[in-house]
Image (cartoon, rainbow, N blue to C red; front, side):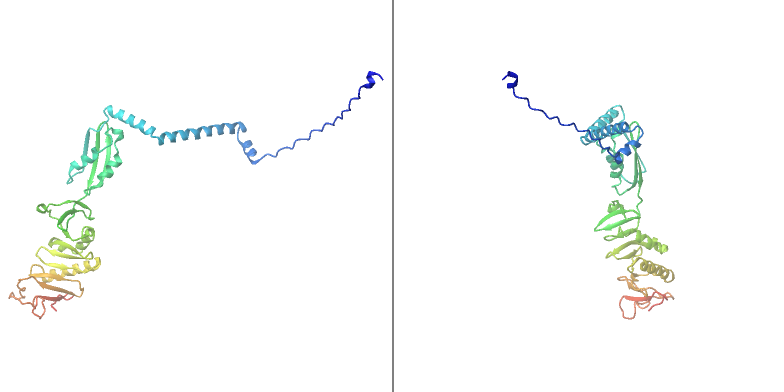
Length: 324
């Protein structure tokens, strides 16, 4: 046997046929693709916009972090102090509009600043602190460069003196507390007495306006039980009025008419009570003589409207001005 025949025959290799490449499926364009296609410049423009957007977000976060850490505040304060060192610092305070309030209180508020460098003066805060004073109805605070702080004040006008628990206070026409009043220097203003009488000052002004002829004769008005008024006249009499603003005004008008025709004030009466709208109940002052009759002779208790019981009280018909 020959050497060639002794070799084993090599196994036959099977060659697999190559697959034909399948055609790729075309991807259907999405809504986003359509949107990008409509943008001028196409995908390149969108990429640039996205890059700018990311930059803006990162930059905004950096700014917010710096603000949270107070970096800008420190820089701004340092710059403002630098401006102040150049002469822009509060050196003068000009106040206008003060008539009664102590000017030192205004100066103290104006100078109470975190810094007196003009850019750092808190104008709104200064105004708010000034408005806490009763005298000040309004205020305007402004800078006048280089070194002047200007304060224009609108003061309230005192309308009455409020007496409560032995303390005297000036109040305006709305009942706002203005200032304490020393007993030896009470101004010539109406006096309202009693707890809560200051808040009733507007109502009292409307009441007394219903009978203006009586205004100069009233010495004081007492707010009783947080519901009604007693009026004290200069001649010493007290007028008791009913509850309710309308009823009190009607009663005061009737009393003014009766005083005009009968001359009730200054005749020895001590108290008039008009809580009953149909009659005026009167009481003589202690130790006072009865008013004289029409012919000039001394009268008795009955002539004074005291009734026939011999005591010092009686009633007068509020409608007919006659003695009942």
